[in-house]
Length: 359
View 1 (cartoon, rainbow, N blue to C red):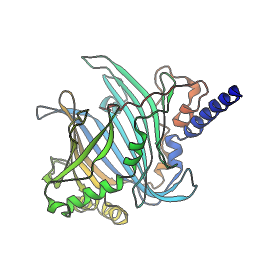
View 2: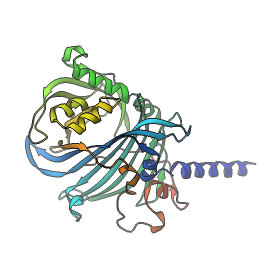
View 3: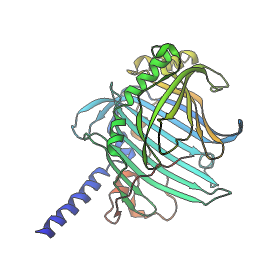
View 4: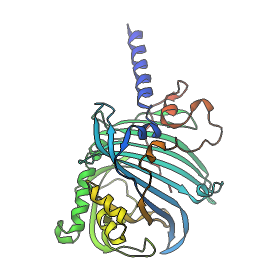
């Protein structure tokens, strides 16, 4: 009897990994049906030290589309926003090797009008070979899914084949997924003056996972002129800082950003296509103009370099499977999250998710 129960538990675990792991980025895109033209934002990623710009590290592209999402649990078509982010280093953009080769992709699905995060998936494809320090290679795919009413998580390391399903504080992360709409509303209100008369204001504290620990942070905002972006222009924007709550066990890296509501960005750029997209958007979200991330030495600055409306409404359906194959990866593993999670030979071990820094 005990053996039968043990076999049942093992089969149930394997089945859950295979079914949950069937969500590749391409499959996620196929479950989304765009109803508006995709809006694309292009950012330059630059390295700064002692206030000086020392060169471009790579590029980030963010594409958002409004449409209908086929819900995994209910089967219903729900209004949603599909976000796809791609981060590539200069070496990856050139198609050549180098000391820093990064080709990461992320996908997020948020329902409308609540802006609850339903799915977040990412594919890491990184080779780092610094002049000082140890080289490292990261090849992994992971997916966070809240459609079942709780935070489900699965990750596969493509180099070792280890499948991880444990996650630090899944309840806190699920709660955060339900606060996205509130955070966006707070930022929009702060810009428009309804939060403390456009003085310094702080939103509700939210729990995030930093270095394997749950830390409470608060977004603090104030009006400020942005650093130069979009052909060296500066805008009267909303300055946003992430501040850890008192007593945090982990010090968060300094993060700050300057942003404008999407409708305001469309107005000041004078782009008629962006204006029409802003008119159709059910949520007037803050668009980052410039973002700064503190490093151990220097900082990374992400700067908006261009914005526009994509010409193909079905571009998401033709999304590629993910990062190109590299190294001695098992050819039977296939492409995308589905094949990468669904291998019988993959080792399944409870490994706690540790956040990784892309740049």
